[in-house]
Image 1 (tube, rainbow, N blue to C red):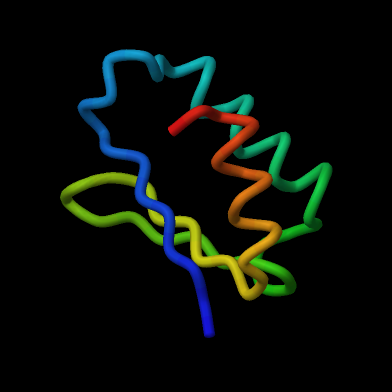
Image 2 (image 1 turned 180 degrees about the vertical axis):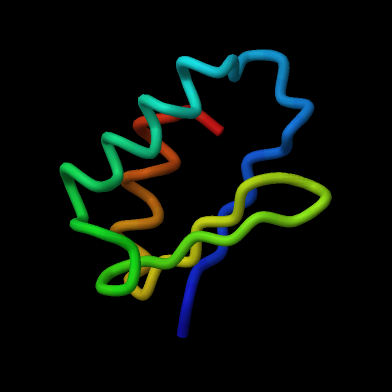
Length: 65
């Protein structure tokens, strides 16, 4: 089972630097996409699909989404 987290493009709290920081933090903590998580883009926002619910929760807590 995967846990999907969507960060909407229109999130006012996220600016370009925050997007770069979130992506870098994810790589530093979980490795490159394809192992513990995958990323995709949609019209609504950036999608992080975590294989482990605990990893998804850590991501949510870190970025306060």
